Structures are given as C-alpha cells and as structure tokens.
Image 1 (cartoon, one colour):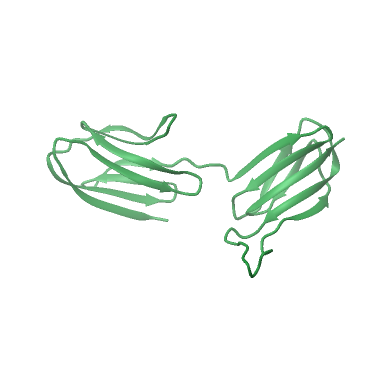
Image 2 (tube, rainbow, N blue to C red; image 1 turned 120 degrees about the vertical axis):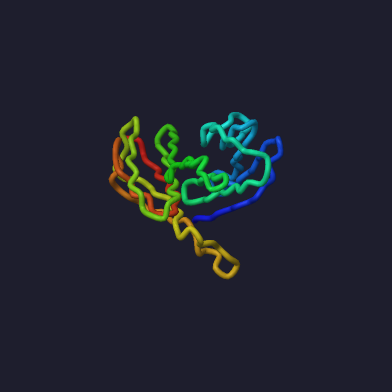
Length: 186
C-alpha cells in the first residue's frame, strides 16, 4: 500500500510533532516525527525504550508556513519539509513463521505458526532422538476464512499421522497455518 499525507503548518518559535499510526497486525503503535529546537527525528516511544527509526537531523525552519509531507509505502515512509526529503524510514519486519517446542517424559511437542500465504519449509532440530512416525494436528486455510452460524465448520482442525521425524528434519508448514507436531521420544 502507498499513501501520502500533506499538511501545511505555521511554524512559530516552537516545535512540530506529528504522530503516525503504524497500524499493521503485528505492531499497532504510533511512530512520532518530531521537530524541535532545529532537530528532526522519527522514533517510537514504548514503556521500556525509545526506538529510533531515523537519526536526528538538523533542520532550519524559518517562522511562517511550511509544507510537511509523509509518503508511505510497503515497509516504510519518507518525510519531507517543503519538498526536501528529510528522513527515509524503514520499519522493522517480523518473522513470518514462529515456532516453539515443549517436552514431556515421553514426547516432544513442536508448535509452528506460518503467517504467510505460501508454504514454508521449516528445518526442525531437536536435542533428542524421536520416532519417525508422529501426529500432526493442523489448522489451516485462507487468511480471510472464518466460521459462521450457517457454516460452523468452514475452518476446523484436522489430525493425521505422518512419518519422517528425526533429530533433524524438514517440515512443510502450509500457508496460514498452525501446526502441532507431537513426536514420540525414541
């Protein structure tokens, strides 16, 4: 997605502050473009830290009207003052696949979430030997699918037995899926 926001502001011996909404599903926190005392930066304040996305830069703004423009695009945005590029901001990206593992006395449980709309190969490395045969519990479907009163089982989990598990093996995580692999310790 791309977009643009232009605003005109009267600068009078004070700072300029604009909060941008970074509204993606993973990170719903605002990012601030702040101009104060002749310095401009772009950062995100959290309870624990101040994440700087664009290093502080000197800007000389005379009193009067100025055009402030933000051009957004996939992965970031550019900040302009009176047509001059001040900052190029690259937003952090997050893993599209996450995995965790847990163990019991006789099994290893691996949970894999694939947030992408394509199948991803996951290299699984364990610290113990496991049997080749394992149980797979899978919830997968189109990202826009859901259940309704008229179709209450449109999205539902399935369970099957697979083979190929080992101390190190590859697992194909389907698009938009939650996979739970229940492996038996050897």
